Amino acid sequence: MATAVRTPRERIAAVLRSRFALRIHTSVLLLWTFSAGLLTTKAMLLLGVQSMFFRYTVALAVAYAAFLVGVRIWLWYVGAHEVRADPRFGGTRKADGKSNGSLDLPDLSSGGGSPAEVFRGGGGSSGGGGATSSFDAGGAPQPNLMIMDTPPVTGGGGIGSGGGGGGDGGTLSKLGDIGGIGDLGGDDGCLIAFAIMIVVGLIALAIGGAFFVISMGPEVLIDAAFSAMLSGGLIRSGARVSDPDWIGSVIKGTWKPFAIVLAMIWIFTGTAAVLTPKAHTFGEVMQIVWPLLLEAL
Image 1 (cartoon, rainbow, N blue to C red):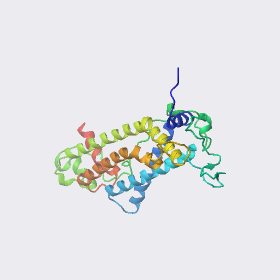
Image 2: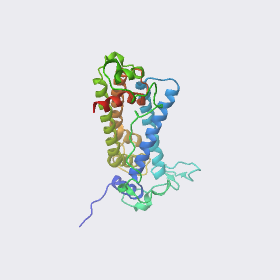
Image 3: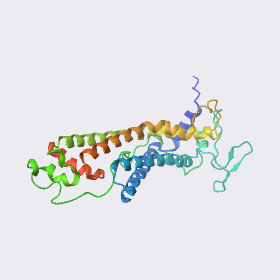
Image 4: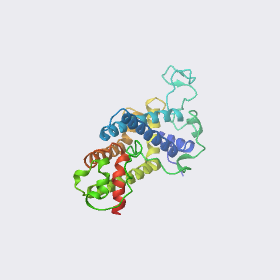
């Protein structure tokens, strides 16, 4: 029985999955992305930028740029890049424009080259985990740029202390100085709904992060590697003109998840500005809405 001829992308995917733990690599990329956003919003807060809407929007943009940088570093790590005439890599430029160095890749258009010969450089394998590797230390990091900033705001007897009386003596009035919510007239229904929205959003982000690590992320990396090799002339293909470079392939595969996160950030910060105008961090918002949600439950 004749075996089906695999395309260059399928052969590259097989090599990457056999030599590298792509899910772990994706998890590291998400952690790197989240850390970049977190450091950005903390730095802006230290500089006096109190608007959560502005801080978190900028932080997400910085995080996305950091994600692209991380993918570029990953391409160097696995060897799916064009080695330029740089003594650090020991490579020299051939007359035909191709590189000749320790990370040079064979031509896959004719099906030649065993998987072991395709990716020779970039830091070695990850223990043979492949795409089916499982996590040793918990689930996937969550690409959530809203869990950020500053220690809790404290005052008086604490948020959880005191009685639960109604009117001016209830939980809402005790939190009024922190959140600036006294104008709601003691009706905490909006805040409870806001708390539920936050919980649902965090759950959605957790599920989305897990889906990205398990299913979507490895394919994004494979597409980036294939596009990098294609644009670098390491693969001959008739579709080369119409295929995007690695940045284009990554943006094409990831802009929707980042757009969803951006929409969630705008909804959260816009609602927080109305219901808790004196809260400038996610932690301060949660100090206001979480006790109310627990009371309602």
